[in-house]
Length: 90
Image (cartoon, rainbow, N blue to C red; front, side, top):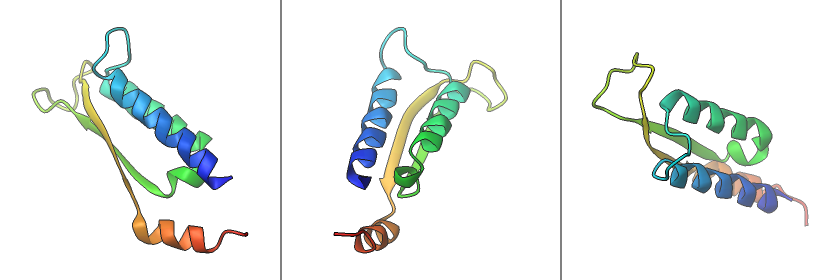
């Protein structure tokens, strides 16, 4: 069950990341943060195993409403991931 939820979580993160470079997709920093937050709410079991960060455009100040997201990066929490997989049932 965890692997399925984890796959869905990672697929959606990759979709959001690819969308930052495509036309007619969300590129605003605040909106990207909101989408990642909703994704974490939808898949909490997978979200707790990853650190997700939205990288803003550094040319504009953080208070600008038109601030763009440049990248979305995620990294697996190895210690927590190992602990979760060991505690799973057979």
